[in-house]
Image 1 (cartoon, helix red, strand yellow):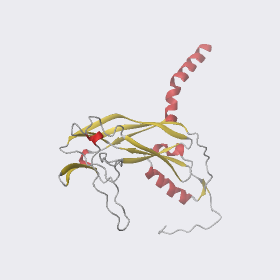
Image 2 (tube, rainbow, N blue to C red):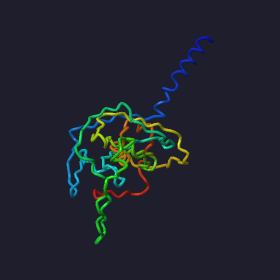
Image 3 (tube, one colour):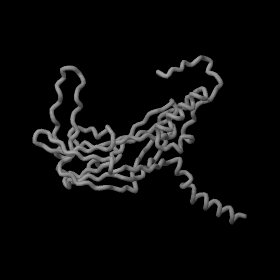
Image 4 (cartoon, rainbow, N blue to C red):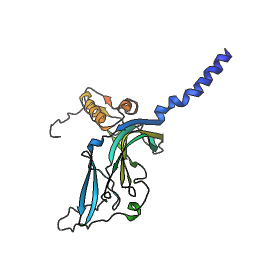
Length: 242
């Protein structure tokens, strides 16, 4: 009997890290399509540049003078008491594209005020454009946190699926990769806020959340929703204009 106890204990210790992985990590696969990429040549006075666009995405790298590349943002639901300490991309698959002209540099925003003078052209950052290093140095360009429905902790990750090699005149596009988010305890004090809601209202919130995040299979693990009641004690105002 004692022998079986030690065998059971050994198996438990061996597989305990694997059991804990879903609590400590979030993993997701992404795929991009070269057919949605456009590389257009534009001229600024006598200078020629390559404009890089992906599908209808309007978000791009934002540091003035640096190469302007598309950035795509993704939301993940995470436990309310966790935060990301590392986001890594693995199993990367690339498509390579040679370009004849440098990537167009990020420009200053055009002011919206009346009679404001438009900023002049911002020339490429020589330190980056003359370098043999890749830009950006990391495909993960931003991490931000927020909340949906008060108790739903959302992590937003900005990913630039492109790597630009200025000295080679080459752009590498990620066509497939895995994202791994390592989670650690968040010391910021938070508590679950009790919410009472009608069932039809909760259905609407569930639908919005399902469209908002990538890891939909983990919603039930990290989102408590609300307490469903027959009536709220007041009359809600419903309107299609809201």
